Amino acid sequence: MLYVILVAAIVIFWLVAVDRPVLKVKFKDGAIQNVKGHFPPAFKHNVSEIGEVTPFDGELKVYQQRTGMKLVFSNQVPKKIQQRIRNVFPHQGFKSSNGNTKKGR
Image 1: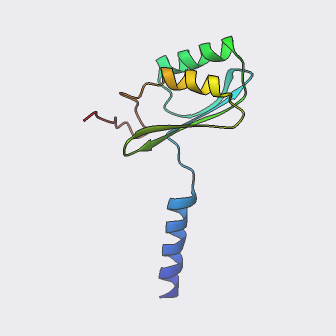
Image 2 (image 1 turned 180 degrees about the horizontal axis):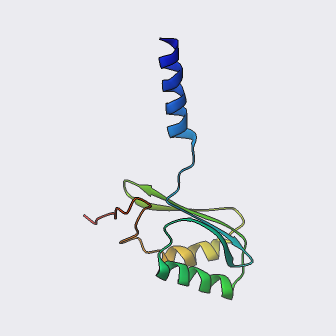
């Protein structure tokens, strides 16, 4: 019985504590260094262009939520760059790693 409770606690901890973004992108001097997840080509082009104009370092994570996608930036990314990236983010039709798309209501 104790093993069942221990396994359940580990599973609950894993579901709550593990960071699972749909897309994770790392930037160094405005260039894309590392990508994990589906990075739409048009969005990738726009973000690369923003990085060429104003180089920055940091990280972008995209999370899937019930209400839509949530963009989370590291503290190193300036607020003006964050807003420019939010403006070009394709909220409609952004595919998660399992291939599902969020349909509008």
